[in-house]
Image (tube, rainbow, N blue to C red; front, side, top):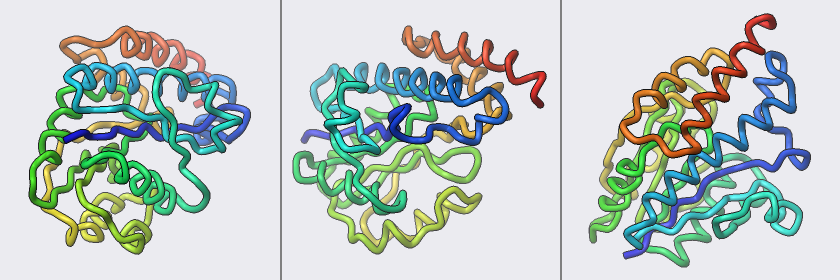
Length: 229
């Protein structure tokens, strides 16, 4: 069974990217961070794709003709319009037409590892209805996967970007399969997250080149941010 992994991204200049970081490091550096973090996630998806069971996608926030050239190396799928729940539902639905399992990840947890994606994909390859979740430290989640069609209302029920988002999401999706929970990760939303994410990157047993680049970039941006905090 094949499994899709879609990385949700926004294209600089076409969308506002990482706006919560703008007061501390400025728009240009926030865009730079988003792109570097997305590249690190893509590098891990590429590792996980080596056995042929996983195929990576960029899930684009903008219409593909305008943004596709900015995101090379993977196939493209459009998020479409609407709330985060609506956009996740759209990407999941599109990829379920092509793959038995679908995994959705953000671009904000560059310290993820290929083994985590492979664990989720292996779980979703089973015959029973199954779901996978990677919780974020802030109460959200950095990964969701499933191997069954999911009704649109379930995607719209949780309140996103809240401390209880992951718990509400699990309750909303509970009817669609049995859960496998992956390791919890710190994602990058604010300046306060830099140190924890950098420490998790430094602790990786075999960081990719792009993940090594994120270690250096977070250190650099931390020095920029210090006078602003």
